[in-house]
Image (cartoon, rainbow, N blue to C red):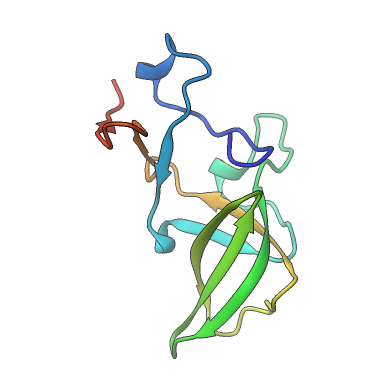
Amino acid sequence: MVGDHGLPAPATLADRPGLELLIGIRAENIEADTQGGQGAPAGQEANGHDTALVAETLVVEPLGSHLLVTGQIADQQLKVLMRADAPVKPGDRLHLRPEEGKLRWFHPDTQEEILPA
């Protein structure tokens, strides 16, 4: 769980329900928008409902060709790259969809990556 949102975990974790993990993803591997539009398959259930993670925008840093946006979900902060002309400002809700296969899962005590089966 990230805040109130669940993410599909690797099959290798099926026998360890409730295990708290660390999740890693690169900022460029997250699709983000402020409209809540349905886009990437990773952001949709089979019935077509949007399952994006929803974050609050904290900081927007213009970096020339793109924006580096800091958002927060519950007590976790994350960074996302967005187009330079994206209509985002602090306080906006961001709808985040990690690219399929780009999430990395780590054991919180050992910091070792948990690889998919």
